[in-house]
Image (tube, rainbow, N blue to C red; front, side, top):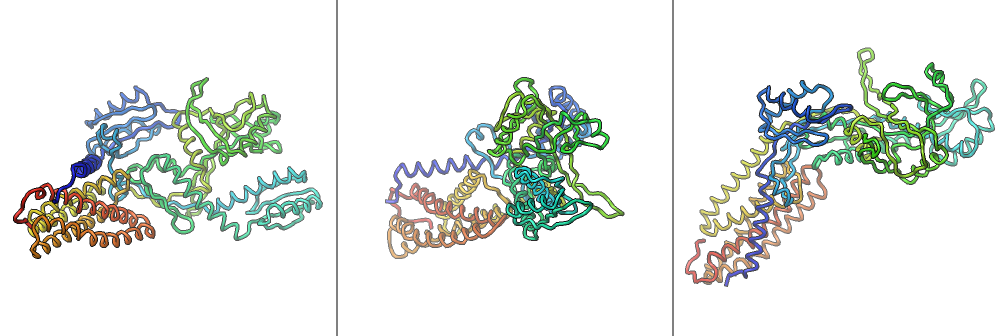
Length: 617
């Protein structure tokens, strides 16, 4: 009686060994590092590596390890104090040509990483990181909606061969200018059918006939909501590309977004990617236009003057072939012929058709790639800050079309592999629907996170020791067995959270502490049942068997009700509440295994299979 078969003991042992293996990485902690990346035009080779080593050696800052990749150098240090000093020295020595960013990386041994044994992610309050509060430029969102109408109306009237003098946007309205009232009437009829949400009015001035379109209140609200939702999605995609573990991206109010990036100590790189509104436009070069006249402010109708990165002027047609919105995938690499940085682009079906049609008709003609980036800008007007959007437009590539192409092609003319990767990242993640401005920025230092971890660990340890002392005093040997099972429960809980790569926050630590207190309840129920059986005069072996068998139903009932509460918290809660619920639910499941199977296995090894006269309970 009271003996598990060998296979069951081996199964429990294997589960516990696996639990220890996958829980141990959390004890190694993280190593502070400085990551150095080149900006446009800069390089990062052996010469720069030697220079970095000399700078830090001259400042008496010891490097634990230096890892050089093709585009980045990572320096490991013993603590954050040396890390911060190293960053100051490197910023001064390298100047503005390099990004010197702080980060924390796991110190897990390589052999554990090959088994996918990794520590839990730590939340912002434990690991440190950056917190951004971003405001979406809603005026720009409405402006972009009006600009889309301008482009759509031009294509609509051109396809229907309705003549117009010009279509543009003025004073918050879409303005179409016609030579005759008949042309205006035909255009109004067509536009009303295709775009019924656009409010149309007529006006006559200076011998011309105008059709004025404005967005309805409903459409303005929809444009703003779309911009906010699209920006949340785009930011999430960009952060995923950055590789930040378990970020928080939440909508706040009608025009703001909260972004939390655990483990990112230096916000410079994050701000560079999150705030960028980079996109591309593909236009044909106007080879017949007078560029000299364009430089004098008299650009031909249907064309516009741009500049290449080296400052050379280039005249492009206003008609856009394809925009960044039609790019569904982008990857950085090297041009096979020249070896220069390149971005390989894949278009959607609509963009592919447009590109195929254009290249088929334009073989031998030059086509340009225009890089467009919009940045929030604040200027002072009579002492009052005025928010504006600064647009940077430059031609990054002009190439002659040698053959027709459609869905896949490459872009060259980029200055560095880093720029190619950043551009590919932004194109994959999508352009922001409207510019955003960071209105609040907070950096939570790793030292504060370490302090929170220490307090959480100390509180859990104190609770565990108190339970062990109580159980050992009240239940003797059985109390010690329950304490071993409780420790096993803690190990399994941490292992499962690590395997799931869950994010641990302060509420999560509270969930662990609560789970330790609740997990011992099952053993209390079992041991009290064993005592009751002994008082009824049953033998020790029969009392053990009855105690575990008859307490199981009560244990199931009590834990199921708590699981229901935990699932409700997870489904209805958000943020830290959901983190607490995850820890609580997993802790309940592991406690049922450890309190029943693990403790029963140990009791069987101590008392089973032999004659026992008295139990130390």
